[in-house]
Amino acid sequence: MKKKIASFIMIAVSAITLILGLSVFAYAASRISTATVLGAEEAPKKLELPEAIAMIAGAAAVIGSTMASAFALKHVAIAGFAAAAEKPELATWLLIMGGLAEGIAIYGLLLGIMILGKI
Image 1 (cartoon, rainbow, N blue to C red):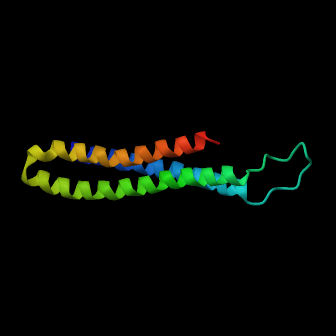
Image 2 (image 1 turned 60 degrees about the vertical axis):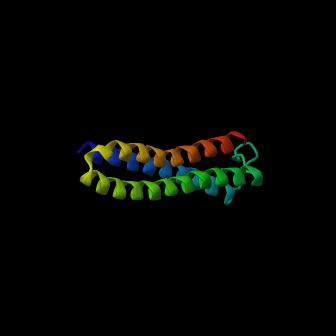
Image 3 (image 1 turned 180 degrees about the horizontal axis):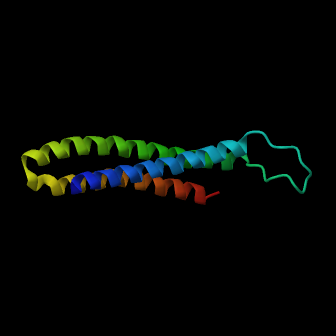
């Protein structure tokens, strides 16, 4: 039962990271699109092309790493639960490999933060 809860937590963290990456991507896309015609003092700051590219690159880093993490975690869970069913002492290795798969998403998130920090 603990293995299923740990796997669920790891998948939830991947899903949250993916949602955060998609929200940054949507924010950048909304800022690039049409600018409203308002008075000079009311006009929102327009997003310049280098800033927009940096936001999209940061979002792509987070989205790509999260998808890779989910793919790795899926295969770790399938193989790990099959191995743990035959040899229960391998359950610890399942958690270690799941944590390494989650590390992919964390590295992508850090890379996205570093890219956005340059704006």
